[in-house]
Amino acid sequence: MPSSPSPGESGTSTTKRRRSGTGSSGRPPTRKPAGTVQVLGAEDALFAHLRGQAPSPKHGVIYVHEAVRGTRPGERGSAARALAGKLAIAARVDHYSGERKPELDAQLAARIERIRERETA
Image (tube, rainbow, N blue to C red; front, side, top):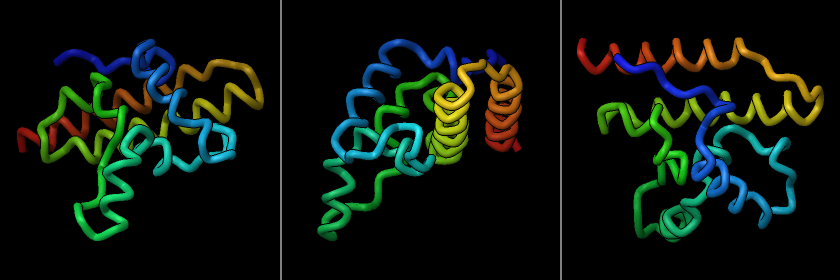
């Protein structure tokens, strides 16, 4: 089974898409909760949900990340939550200390592996 990319190596296209959606709320990306990071880029779907016209979105541009795309459709919400959580933590660590934390990579890889094992069970 291929290993999932680390939060720090989430890919330039995913990173650019994620960053492009962060400026509208006025809150800096380091202060956003993981749930907000998870649905960045899904604003249209979120507003349709709030109007009662659609189900709530599970993920936005984070959907194109290999850790999410590589899981079974029924488990993509779990993978998106795991990735968003680690991205939110990594953004805070980067902002406040400027140091890379390799243990975040290992924790994300272990979590994604557990999610993918649930697919076969």
